[in-house]
Length: 396
Image (cartoon, rainbow, N blue to C red; front, side, top):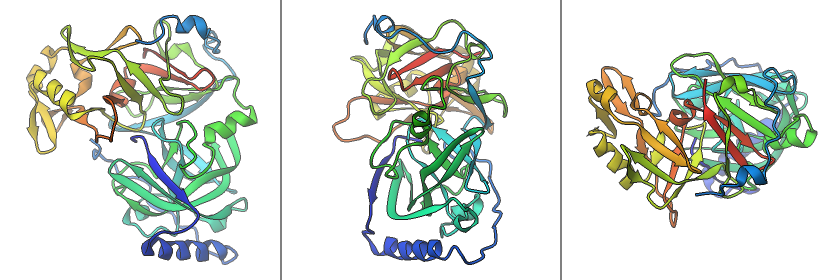
């Protein structure tokens, strides 16, 4: 998802949240009452969401465990590709474990799943957490509100054991939603953020930070290999890098501002002509969004360049012309990362849609792009918290 803006407080600020607060507190305080486990229907398939230091590598010598192709220190977690629109993996919460399918998202930092007490229609379409069925659950009276662009949730901050495969985070803070807006058709139950810690996001330490503190990783990194047009083959790996997933060498780019996974982009060009980011710009590498998002003006210029015509909120190009369209080249830290037309267009129901979309503007923000799964399917990505940098290389 897009980068979050969240507000955490210990009091409820409007009448609707007061009602939800009472509902949640009463429900959580009655966990000695026997409540049946409710097996919700898990998912519905969706198509809804449609230059820096040249001596950086010398100043930050590469030390990741990438030389061994089957490094035993690397922890692999499979992801399922849903129509090239989202990559979802299973986690377990509570004792005994309750299973959820979550979006592993570098654009946010909190973890949340639906609560059994959630009143929103989307909660009835996804797995919901039952606090009373977990012996390690701990409630709080803290409310959180989290906004992801046009969708949002409201709920409570709680604590419990969270498992990502063999990784175990005890007393992990996370959110239980009591109200959700815009999640009716998403193919996942909740979101697991892999961004930097943010004090206002569910008010607590992200799961990756807690696992780092426990010393379970040989290296404080995680990496993504995202498959294209097939359900299996995608993976997020923790604690090291397996070079079988990429070609050549990793090119390292420093995080432009510690606190999020933003990097500096030198320019964006087509056919040798700079079409956007003429004076440099920022970009968020976001596993939680499907597309390439940018400011309205530059995106409109690219749409014209590829002869995309608007149909409602979408832009379509001639499917016959896709093979002749030039790649869009993102130059990052002096290295070109081309995105071919076959990647920045999507064939669906006889139309070929442009995968460039306008991102909502923010006050006093310079030109900023979101490089989502369209970009990350092409380039294996390593997120290095230890050195505050991102490694990129062509994916295998």
